[in-house]
Amino acid sequence: MELLCFRSLLRNSKTEITKGRYPVFRPSLLLWFGALAFHWSMLVIVTRHLRLFTEPVPSFITLLTQADGILQIGLPYYFITTFVFLVSLLYLLLRRISNPQVRYISLLNDYFPLFLLFGIGLSGFWLKHLQKTDVVGVKELVMGLVSFNPAVPEGLSLLFYGHFLLACILIAYFPFSKLVHMAGVFLSPTRNMANNSRKVRHINPWDYPVTVHTYEEYENEFREKMKAAGIPVEKE
Image 1: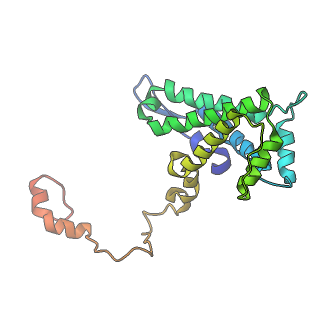
Image 2: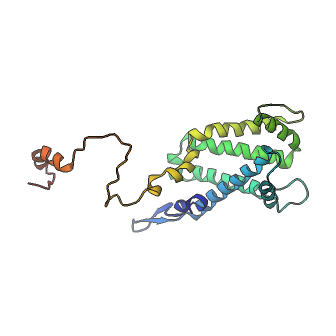
Image 3: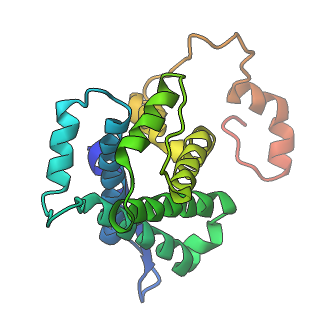
C-alpha cells in the first residue's frame, strides 16, 4: 500500500486552522493524485525506454508500449503517460511555487530536479511527437554504449543529445539527492521495526558497549540543585 499507493501521503497531508483556532488535519487528495500520477507515469516511461537497451525486446515491454499507446490515431504513437507525466509535473511545480508554506521551506535542490525532469519530458515529447527521430540510430547509439563499443550514427539531432545529456545528469544526480527518498520505504525504522518501544527495550546487537547513566543516578547526582531550581524530583 505504501509503495504502490502512497498511503502515508494520503493521510493527514493538509493542515488548516478553523474559526475556533483548532488545527484540522485532512488528506490533500489533489496532491496525492498528482504524486501518484507522476510516479506511475514515470515508471511506465522508464520501462518503455528499456526497449532501447535490450535486443531482442522483452514481450512485456512491447505489451506495455501497446497499452500505453491505446489511444493511437495514426503514427507515431501518442502515449498516455507522456501527457500525464508533464501535466502532473507541472502541477507539482506550481504547487511548490504558489503555496506559501511549501515555498518557504523549498530550497534549490527542491527546484532543480523538477526543472531537470521538465527538460527531459519536454525534449522527449518534442523528439517523439513533433520531430522525426531515427529510432534505429538511437538504439544503435545506446546499444553501443551499453556494450562498451560506442558508435555515433549519423542523422541524430542536437536536441536528442541534449535530451540524452539531461537523462545522464538525472541518473548521476539521483543517488545524492532527495529523489532517493524511495529507499526510505524499505529503510525507515518506523515502518520496519516493532512499535513496542514502551514495553520492550530494543538493543542494537552491533552497538559497542556504552556506559549508561540512568535517571535515578542522574537525580542522585543533581537532586539538591534540582530542588533548588524548583524541578520536581521522584525521591526527596
